[in-house]
Length: 147
Image 1 (cartoon, one colour):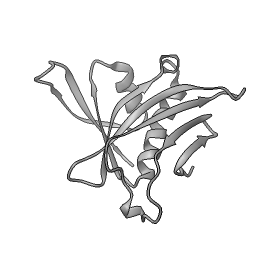
Image 2 (spheres, rainbow, N blue to C red):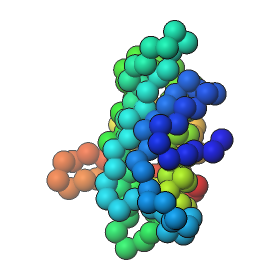
Image 3 (cartoon, helix red, strand yellow):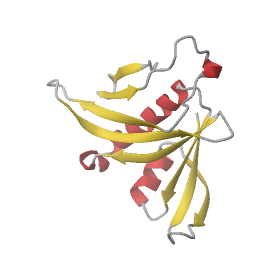
Image 4 (cartoon, rainbow, N blue to C red):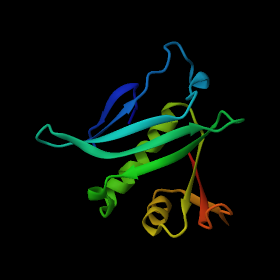
């Protein structure tokens, strides 16, 4: 499914995501986000209502134009216990990252956040490394997703 700049409706999922404009004339190799960018995902009901589904932020990795970092992911509570919406949410983040020309996405999660760890693993994320955050005392896992 091709992701185009502007408001895109994912008919398969009844979801839409707002994608910021990229200057026209850019080649795929020139794509990319220049700064931290917030995305809002909306649920398009069959009766034409629209409600919040989730949101996420993508941050370019300093020093490597092929890596994007996914932070601040939030799935609305009403969708969290359902399998498909969680999978769709991960897939949408991937599609947006690919649209901007990235090859790899990174994320972190607290290892105690079982729903997020399980959802990420089911969506193809590989948790390669974990550590204890000296500032917070939380156990953190680093996830990697090839795009």
